[in-house]
Amino acid sequence: MERLLYLATTDESGGLSHASLEALSGACELAAALGDADLIVGLIGAETGAGAEAVGGCGAARFLAVEGEEFGASRYSTDAAAATALVEAAEATVVLAAATSRLNRALPGVAQRVGGGIDTEVTAVAAVDGAPQVQRWYYRQRMVARVGREQRPWFILLSPGVYQAWDGTAASAEVETVTADLPEVRTRVEGLEAAAAGTQAIRPDANLLFVAGAGWTKKQKDGAAHVDRAEALIKGLLDKTSASLGSSKSLVEQSGEGQEVISFMTHMNQVGQTGSTPRHSKGLATCCHGEEPHVVGWRFINERRAINLDDNCGWAHGKADVLYVADAFEVLEELVKLL
Ligand SMILES: Cc1cc2nc3c(=O)[nH]c(=O)nc-3n(C[C@H](O)[C@H](O)[C@H](O)COP(=O)(O)OP(=O)(O)OC[C@H]3O[C@@H](n4cnc5c(N)ncnc54)[C@H](O)[C@@H]3O)c2cc1C
Image 1 (tube, rainbow, N blue to C red):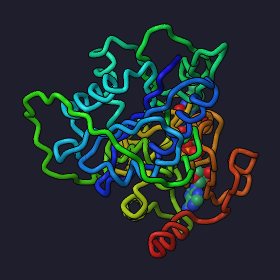
Image 2: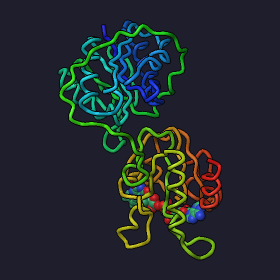
Image 3: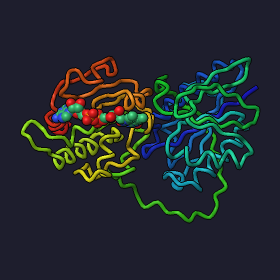
């Protein structure tokens, strides 16, 4: 019989993030599919009470927590120690968690410590003949495979944006406190500062993917380009929404061609066939034509919208759910004001 441990870190208020609640849906689905598996909840954080209560009605047999000030911030040494203690206390055979940047970083090392195996970027879980299987994409998301493993414990990091967030009823939960063996902690977290530029604007956990295309740097209706204004508008939107910033290939390639460019855009932002294939529940493409090599990177964006002056652009050909035929400068100006 499998023992499923659902692992999550709590936020400053002790609650659980959207991505964590999505992973809980995945864990509940796998537990139900396996039929006779025990589901155990394991939480890590400065405070975990609110999180335990929020998921108290999920049907878990046990609720475990590693709690304390030192577990509040994302830090490999403390996160890995806490997760190891929870896996051991639960005697877990399968560990499911959201593929947040925090757990993506800590759990591979934990799998190594406890002699287990790990699969990341998992997009579905299932039970086949009473054994768990995961779905993963390979070869730049062109091939999909179902994978099973004999090795236990098996760690499964579920990609955000795959499951609906768990929205069952809250209930009080009897939480067992687990003590983690802390190594000497050398890294002190002094605070969090949100960066709005460079790779820091790539936020896998964000609800919204905001894509900028080359149109932002093209001549506009007054016959001139307005790259500074474009940059300010995009930055304004990112500041207000904490969206993840994506780009078309044409836009990120302009810097190599000596053109005036959006300063915080790099090749890391490129979405598409030769770029990334991010996962977000919503996407908004602006000043981007919506050509196939770009849109192929949108296959895991659930709800797609685009703003383009051209009512015959690629998005209009069935690639977006909604196309706003409008000037993106004007729309963003208004949007930032409203936000
Ligand atoms: C092998 C190969 C691999 C490729 N891989 C990728 C990839 O990974 N990712 C990728 O993105 N591309 C990729 N491409 C390139 C892709 O085919 C397109 O050339 C590219 O996506 C076009 O970028 P764009 O839409 O930003 O620019 P453009 O095609 O120049 O489109 C600009 C758009 O902005 C609109 N616009 C201008 N001003 C405004 C305004 N004020 N308001 C609203 N709209 C406005 C215009 O109407 C136009 O539609 C690849 C191509 C090949 C051949």
